[in-house]
Image (cartoon, rainbow, N blue to C red; front, side, top):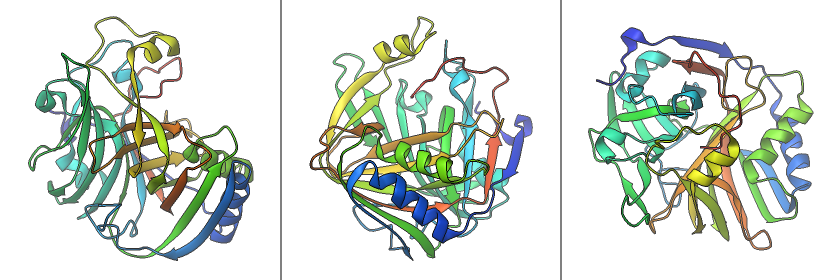
Length: 319
């Protein structure tokens, strides 16, 4: 049975405050070192249920928070198959009656049949998932061909790890970020995270949102089925993962924090989907001379650390 709230530990920590003008300036400065054209501004959140964003609720505002569930030690060196989460309990963990959850994690292998990437996008209520628009990306066990498909209504589970931006799903003020033509070595998300850390080195800050790669291509990975051989290094993980190049437009759901705050938080995680059957875990764009990004982000107020693993991953894993 999936893990329930009866045996989960939920830790919380409030993020520090930062003036929105300072955040905008920090993001603009950091992104300008990495992209030829950059625009960062505060705007009213557009209707994110519309394409190309296709979220399960209109906005990402209203008590925005980050949720870090499980973690990499549940996957390496060998998977812990008993770590399986019923996401209909999300409202109880957050004490939020209803809202929107978007983010990146591991798919429900009991339903999918194999390990997979979860691109989480759902509206939740009190003890229920009201509307699911989530995707999974998997590899065909026989051909290793990537397959991206939606999860059916009622399939509310995930395995081993999940990183979410949650909110009441309301309209409000958000940070709009537009970038074109990458000239530096960092990917879009890492560049924003580094910019925030450099400007606010003594503050614990977290952001989440949705962005679209409007032009260009991107390197993604899709996890194969669980490894029967222990994965004990980055090199072993890299040789196990299946890397693919995907075409735009790609809708990406992302969270990042400036530090792990001694809570074993994942500092950044981004998964993406598309209407043309491509998706997975985002690494970076592969066509820097033509890439175009457009995203909408919010500053999170609190992080919820759910079911933190008792052991730690002793190497970096980009699952």
